[in-house]
Image (tube, rainbow, N blue to C red; front, side, top):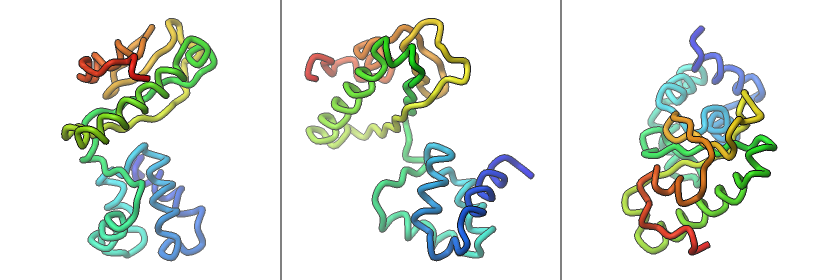
Length: 160
């Protein structure tokens, strides 16, 4: 059994009737993968016998879902104790604030970001705070350094 099928199956096992709990099922799938990947949605449709178009209609009519193809920058800030104590929390809060201001002022400039906190399995991190940006690890970060990495270097970290 492939990994996507296995993960979707484990989410569906938590629900007696997944069809009537579609929002919760989709939220759990999004929590599992960090977004709603195409492969997971296809697997959900196969396992529940719900047409994929109906699942997409549900997603479109609900708030809070992030489709895999909508993500252009994936930023995961480490939440291990050493990263939190070294400024990781402040970086996350600053990034969230700047992205919100950018979205309100400019409609996000067409940039779609997905941010989340993760726990580094290799914690404690050697050079905290650390973050993964599109799968690449960056260590000893500052908010302005992270903004430079994601292409928002002209945003001022001091706005926070």
